[in-house]
Length: 364
Image 1 (cartoon, rainbow, N blue to C red):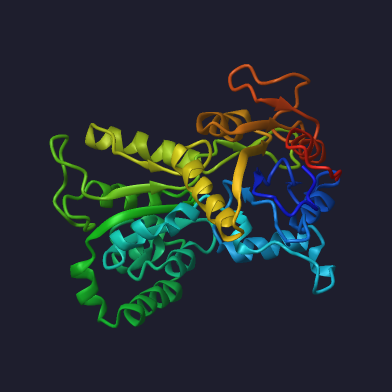
Image 2: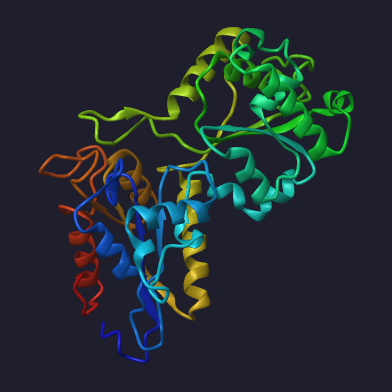
């Protein structure tokens, strides 16, 4: 494809994993900075851009802040003002599906309990969940719910949590305590692994009306509280010699403990790679990007380092999958369990392959 041609109507959509493809820990992999910068530049006199997203199971902060952080790591902040940079629209985080207007509409006037490693309460509020409550706030409101672990939260911080909740909802804490019937739990980005979080979640999920003190459900009852888990990574790569355990270990522990106590499991709506819901929503956002430019998407390409998440998810969605050897996958060949369409060395080689397959006359 000659991108100087004024008849351009189709371009590929490129989806790239972050950890293990662009960066590993705080280290930039190969020429990833140059590759990403090149993809951000317009590819034609009509100022068309290849629809591109960075799809990661990371999160815990708003998409725009994640983009700014990656810009700093890739040294894009040093670029002149007229040089392109990543924006929030380029970032698909593990919790981005919670920004779906349909989900926001369902819970806009209902209490939802949120948890995660970083700034998960603010993420939920920015999406539009007006009645979001953090798990630590809830434990401070009901100190007898998890008395041992709550000792790790200072008395001053507990009082601050209660003040913030009163201010946010414009009601005295006594009234809030009565009406805290949760409709959903959002595990935004893993959890601080503690018995407090395990206890609070178990109480809410096991409640018939979503209140921490509500009547307990049985195996014959329908689950009242929906549980949304946004990151199912069991391991992830960084600079340590072997992969590190990921956020999935919390959900594994919670389900095991819940089943031991109640005698049955609970249902989870799971986001994150390789879940179909995540890939479907990614595809929806990419189609919107293409539509704004008046073009169609020729093919969807997923570049990732993990066969069990990146490649499996792309294959299930009917995308072209490209496996790199810079992260979890290190072997010379393809994955046996989840073979990719193509196997290359790194991100640069992957993009050059896409350009070749799409007849784009450009080299990175």
